Length: 149
Image (tube, rainbow, N blue to C red; front, side, top):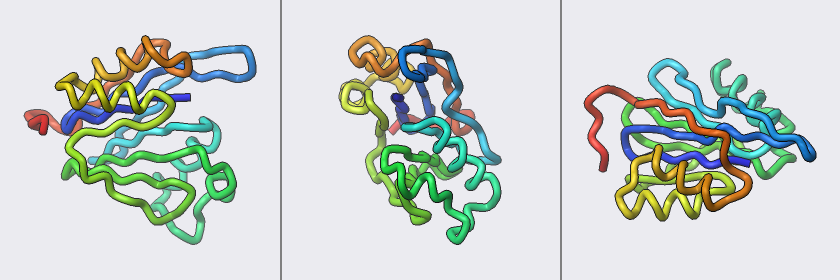
């Protein structure tokens, strides 16, 4: 499970993944050209979504696993700061809020963001509250000098 948080400047993600009773540390966010991407949900399906996006996001090649999974999202922060989500479809929807969060820890993180927390702090808070989040965090800034909304 996951928590991703966007504060208008920084994308943050926890690093926890679970397989049965085992937990491990992974990276869930990446820079793709001028965009930032994050995976939440089933990591193997998310990796397929990431590869699909890297290869041009051809709607005709959308991964079947993402269609049937229903739990995995690919979050894309574009260079202009807009946030788009691919969720069981090759057609994304836009989040129009200045801050947002995704995954199992989304409610805690979004609440923290709305109270003025940074994306990093929102992930830290969600990781304290939600047992599906943790193992530290990764951060990516969209661009230097970006202003938090």
